[in-house]
Length: 286
Length: 76
Image (cartoon, rainbow over the protein chains, first blue to last red):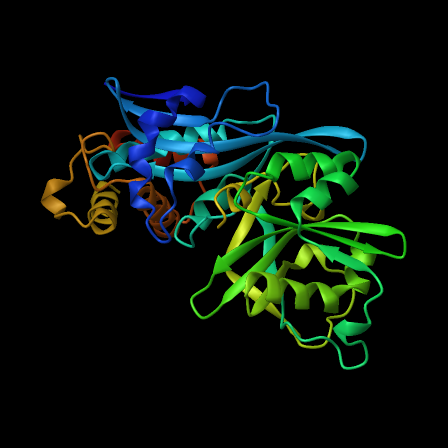
């Protein structure tokens, strides 16, 4: 008999073989493990849903659960991830989707809705979350060469750990073991914490920023940040979610509209209030 | 209506028209996966000039259920 059950941290071993279909790029088991064993506190033990044929797990739809304080309220999230079903059971995979759509008390986000599935999500109330990136070349502006920088930029985790406070420090600790990198910019007494991933694109490797704690500092130090990221990560391009970037485009940059947009469904939040920090993007380094 | 429904099902599922019957359902049709289901509902909406709710979308997992829902929209 085929049925849907709630996945828990203990489901990891049974679900792991299903991830074998995700080979481009290959993701090691210890990264998949992060979807089940979080590095942040979470009272809810649900990690998504499993499709079972008798006692055998034949499908999975993951949910990465977390809470954030936004505008003085605790908001609950579920980032949707890794919808996978063995080929011979695909005619039952809609049950997993139905179970996930039944989560009514959380803001749902999905960063990997392929174009063929995109209309399915929209039918169930999802809207655009992330539609464009600002792509920057690692070239400092002619009138502010990188050498003149009076601030400080570090990617050293030990240094970052001693300097961050409050919610930024929580993000740092929770994501330290994830497949993302962190940077701290100190400039005129202010600090800007950045979280980014390193992605192998089809044409070039690029760094992708997911979190900016101080947009003013970020904007002021952008030339130096992109130059440092290029050197540190050996990436040609720097991409930033358009929601995180205010004001006119800087020199050596352009807007890129995404073929595969990120989606969300929320009763309380707007796209600009939602980031990618606790998601498959940072946990799996997508 | 059944003729039109069966033809849409056969086209969407890549099946022979003779293989579609009143008993056809997601449960007994391996190629009726979630993507095929989405395409099926979109085709039905276009063919019958209707818009189905998310609840109806989820219920349309067999020929019998589709017929019932179409009848609920005044199509029989």
